Structures are given as structure tokens and as C-alpha cells.
Image (cartoon, rainbow, N blue to C red; front, side, top):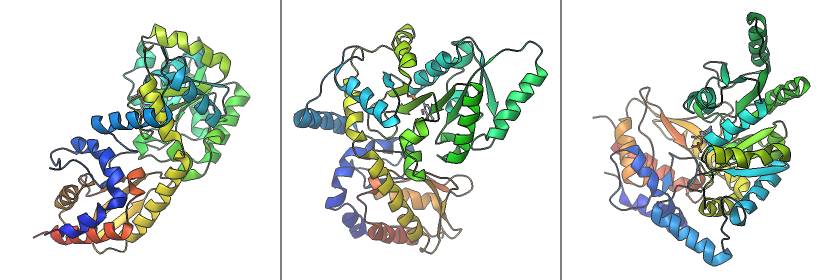
Length: 392
Ligand SMILES: Cc1ncc(COP(=O)(O)O)c(C=O)c1O
């Protein structure tokens, strides 16, 4: 059986703050919800996930320690402070709070493309695959997907796509905008090589093609590549950042860009029913988590490397890094191990981890919950759990 002492060691003083804040994700992995709330480490999310209790407690703590100023319809208080901070971090003239990333992407592309209808974008992007055809049905845009089954499109693929349409269309319509997603959610969070982005951006500027970045998780790309948020952002006309995927807010997004464009957003957000009376809870949580975020994510990824090499020294386990990966890794127990039992037992010990997929791969998503973990103790626990998961 699993040695309980290992879990007790793992859940020692260093882990307690993490345990309180992150167990919500258990609900997402199905039927192994622990008897006791709390978990040591989560390998299933990009950042901290709060229970309602922990969220309210954190807001109360922020209110007590530093005060929170409310906004009114997205103006003033914590929201204006957040917009200023993200404008500064992206190096853009202005930034605006938007209730969702979907709305930020759609409104940005609509504004950038004006009356031109064609928008080139990655086939595997959230905008193409996961925004319910909003661009087509609400904004009258024609999305043209590039690089099917590749993590991202190259400059050459973009040029070929544009040339193909120019050649094969009799009644030419103008190119409205180009969108890129980085890191790429449907490619296991891989980031796009900066050199390729630079080439695409130079081509777009030369041809006056507006360029939008869906940078929902851009801080993860920056931590992995060493390229700063501002260096990424300066290649694009508009940049969207998510506030909830790993920045601790309950929801929300920010769009940054030139002031003249961002100034038009408020009116459009209202037209689309997105002007919410109070947004300060999201803004206050995001402001808090943004402090020191680049450093924490860098440390998380360094620690993940340590963990991966330690895992690779364990018999029956193989841990794999992805080319251009950010925070996602694959763990493969060998064929002597019952992988489902292995991950199930780990969840019982407060290590939140997915079941293996059809190929036997367990997708590990690392996040800040790794920071307080003692790698040696975790490895001990993995060894014990493997022994208890051997096929009979
Ligand atoms: C890459 C990417 N872009 C945009 C979005 C949309 O964000 P929201 O849920 O705030 O609309 C998501 C959400 O999952 C995403 O992963």
C-alpha cells in the first residue's frame, strides 16, 4: 500500500498555502474527489485555481492589506490600475478591460480589419475553432485557416495562403487582418519561435496588414522563451491577455494596443452587451497575481526541468519535454504499470493528475503549485505509488 508518511511529508508546512487555494480542479478530473479538501500539487491547470471560500478569503486579505478601489462600468479603481499596468507591461499606448477573451479577440479583429473581410489565422486557434463562428456570424468576417495540423504557421505558409486567394478569386476583396495565437493551446502550449514571429511581423508591417495576438497565456511563453512580454507585443498591433487562466481572477481579459484603437473599444463592448457594472473583483485578483508573475513562472519552469530529470531516473517512468514547450510535459509509465491505477492513487494522495490517454501518456501541466514542492519527497511518493500500481 501507499506509504502515508510520504504524503504527510509532502503536505508539510511548505505546502499548506497551496493546498488551501487549489483543490477546485479536482472536480474536473471526475470521480476521485478527495475526502478532505486540499491538495498538494496540481498537474492539471496553468495556474492557481480557487475554491469559492479561498477566493473570498484572498479578496478579503487584499482588501485588509492594501485596499481595493471599485470601478463603475469598468472605469476607475482597480480596473484602471490594471489597464495601466498591462499597457506598461506590453509597451502599448493603452489597454482596456474586456469581460472575455473571446470578445477581446473578436472586437480587435473587427476593428483592425475595418471593411475588409479576410482574416488569416492558424487552423488550430481558439479564434477559428472555439469562438462559435462569431467572426462569421456577428462581424461578417471570413476566417481563412492556415497550417492544418501544425502547431503554428510560418511566414512562407502565410504568403502562400494570401497568394493562393489572390490568384483564385476574380472579385478581389481586401485582406483585413492576420491573427496569431502564442502559446498555442491546441498544440500543448508550445510557443512559436520568436524569429518566425519577427519575420511574420515584418512582412505584415511592410504590407500594412494589421496583426493581432491572442496571447491568452503569453506570460507562459515569455517564461519559457526568455522573450519579454513587451518584445512579443511590439510585433503586433493588438494583444489580448487572459486574466483567469493562470492570473488568478475569476474571469476577464485585457486588450492592449494603440490609443486611437483602444479608445473605440468601450463603445463596441457596450454594443455587444459586455459593459459590466462592477469588475473590481477580477481586477484586484489579477493585480495581485501579476506582481512577480514572470519571476514565479520562470522558477516554476526551472523546477519543472528538475522534476523531469528526476522522474527520468525512476524505473518504469519516462518523462518527455516538448519541442518549444512551455508548461506541458508527458509522463509515460511503462507497460508493467497500470497507468490508470497509478494516477488514481496519486490523486488519493493529493497529487492532482490526469489519467493516461489512449496511448498511455499522462499530460502534466505544471504551474505555481510546484514551487513549494520538495522534488525528492515527490519522487519518493512516485516510486511508492508505482510499486503499488504494478500490473498483477
Ligand atoms: C487561446 C485562447 N484564446 C481565447 C480564449 C477565450 O477566453 P474567454 O474564455 O475569456 O472567452 C481562450 C479560452 O480558453 C483560449 O484558450
